[in-house]
Length: 272
Image (tube, rainbow, N blue to C red; front, side):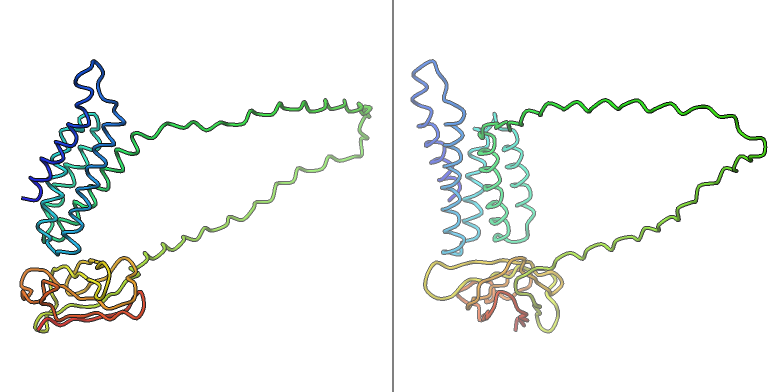
């Protein structure tokens, strides 16, 4: 419902931007039209972020993003790259296992589409290369004096040609591949009745005053690792996935808390 309402609002806003040009012979400028689309997607993103971060309505946030993207796609016929990003993003989001992951995937898609449109309107700036300096003529070499020709003495022996010494080959040692850098955020395990949780999503929501901050990671075979550093503080821990009890899947009912003293650490959670 969120996505349909916003889609209608978005189309109305874009039509207002082109109404003035409909009375005259000139069509709206591409740059001005693109700005309307970019601004409209920004509003869609902000409203979806409020549903995701504050109301914890992941399904509503996902539908908000989906409706906004599908509404602007027909208006971007002159931007095939942006249309391709929308198609790929919507298709990838449908394959995600939870509403939170689907909403987050479309959040990334909206940001990618807005960047693509902005980049397409950036002027092509040519770098000015300095003019090459005129080459100075090298002084002509003076001719060497001609040595006089002297007949060789019959007793003199011509020296034997010496073979050039071979330079020993230097064996090349293979460089070791650099190990990939591991995540810099908190990590640990998630178990259910003593067994690792096969697949789920773990979300941290900051506790205390101010706007909640949200961080998400994937649980794979009972292990999780946040890719980015998480600021120190207390966080409610939400675990969403198949087979996870309902009480751990919302901030209102979860009893799990992470007390971070630094940007990283190890925290194991048992869902009992």
